[in-house]
Length: 354
Image 1: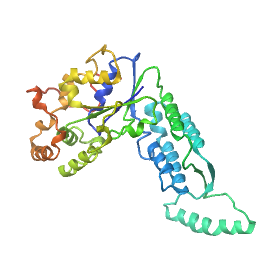
Image 2 (image 1 turned 90 degrees about the vertical axis):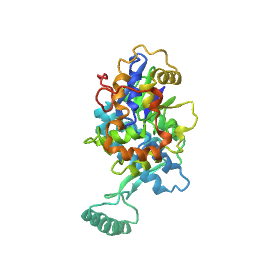
Image 3 (image 1 turned 180 degrees about the vertical axis):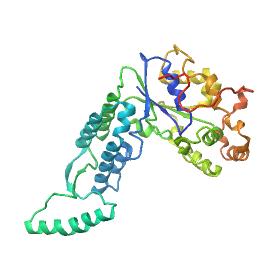
Image 4 (image 1 turned 60 degrees about the horizontal axis):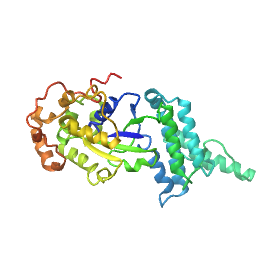
């Protein structure tokens, strides 16, 4: 089973990973040192699939999509090696094997348009338009040389999903994933549409964690200030934040009834711990937690809730959010007056010592 702890950016998905970590390594394996967005990210498997299969596909779409996929792999080498522990040679050999398995034919062609002005003159006007055409006419046949590159035509490949799943499994195995245990990944599926990613994983389950928009907004403007995470969402103008928040949630597939998708509020994990964890255990068919609250402790995480009440300077913004995003607000009043103590923290629980 592959479990994805998913969210929308600072919405508490680490609470899911922290809770599942309490089951111990014999039952659950949490691999969350990196956001595994290899499928859902830009130029990932979903993007590649679209350009290989969409009804307007021509050879150029396929060729450029494959090129971008390989380029993304090359650019991701260091990150996946450093944080996920995947050997660089394994990462690239899996990518190469996958691309070769879906490629129908390859040849040398001009695939990139140079950005540098001087390189553009050399490649476009001297090599492509002058020297190479002259040589080919003289020899009476095509030649292959700089600035041509090997291109791969892979439109409408046979058994794409099967081969893509094998590729993903190879990467997970290189991360040390043990299929005999429940494997928990960070953000392997798109939070608003996890179903689109399921075809690339064996036995996938998504737990989508969301957060009250008022706290999401204020937390970003305060606790995340000075961190790269603060730029996950627009907060300079509250109107823009509302558009952002609503735009990635309204009428999205994660809301549809699906036995493989569980939507869970971060605040539920804090204020309604017993019911929330029961939902989680039932969804993943887990036994009783042998070490409850040893890593995910609601008495600590409560510091990350009702944040908006601690910063009265944002009161007008909060009123606007309450008006525009009323259906997404968490009913804190249902749980009475709560004593909020401790300091806000980012990401994993302070008890997570890994």
